[in-house]
Image 1 (tube, one colour):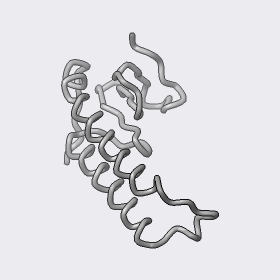
Image 2 (tube, rainbow, N blue to C red):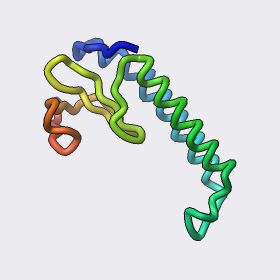
Image 3 (cartoon, rainbow, N blue to C red):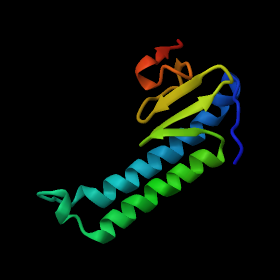
Image 4 (cartoon, one colour):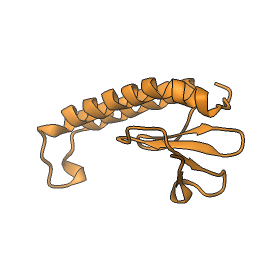
Amino acid sequence: MTKKTFTYEEALEAFPAVREITGEAVARVTAALDTKSFESVEEIPDELITEYNSIVAEWTDAMTTRGLEVKGLWLVDFDSGSGYYCWRYPETALDHYHGYDEGFAGRVKLN
């Protein structure tokens, strides 16, 4: 998909679906890993790694299809044309912004 530029109002309109889809993906990953206990990464069965990777890939596709930029696990940016409205799960609101060069560490609260 082509990169999308969002006004803040458009980002706020898209945000509930983004938060819901992300919450569902996090719940699926948590359910898959919740009852498992591993001493090391090497003990994790290939099927579980495949399931995890599939969930994350589905989530990534759902975010990029909506025009968002995935910047990390459960971390997305809405391009504003001058920087990014930045959101990371489990934040309850879309209320951070950073310029193109600052990245996540340079986020500032909007409200």
